[in-house]
Image (cartoon, rainbow, N blue to C red; front, top):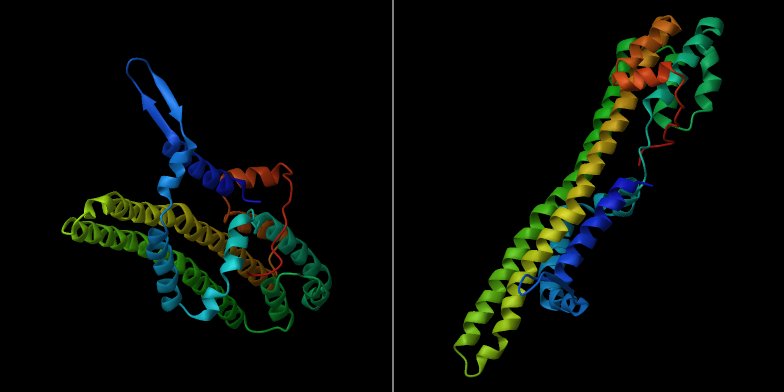
Length: 282
């Protein structure tokens, strides 16, 4: 579970709610009053229709069904902890290198069939099938590029929503102001000024919350997960190419550790706990 995301999200909502229901009185003495009835002031059906409804439908119009249907998977990815551990793949590749030096490349076929990660399995089988090194690298790097492009498209959907939500918040502000000004010309229209002004301001509030509390963090985390997966897959590419070239397993480990930060290298040398690799791409 991604606790930092949940803590940040809940803390943001909590602090905002406290600000909505609190009132500070300085005179004659310092006092903080809490009135939860104030929350009803921030609920406005018209603002919900304009800001949330229009944002959803603009995103729907901007992206294909193939991207939209993966929204549940995106939030599942956001809520999960880091899925890809470079040390897991480095240890696996060093073990494969030792097996290949002892029994030859063909002995890796059994190891490949035991892999849960389809990319890792494909990389090993390309080596087992004795394809040309340049062709293997080309196939694997193209796979990585296409995967990253799909991930960027998913993150871009939330970027789009982050930009659209405040825009429709401003549209709602204009709607509220127009209704307010029109109402001032009508007999008895002053009674609706408060409601119209509330709609004008609350739509902006809704737009900012959607953009910076919901959509923005999701886009950021999806890109972080993509970087983690790309790093591990680049390690796999370098590892299998080195195995095909017959490099020494100890040298291979040192070479692959250069992809990691110094602190992570020190932990690995000190017998740090091994992580698990992800089973498959989301």
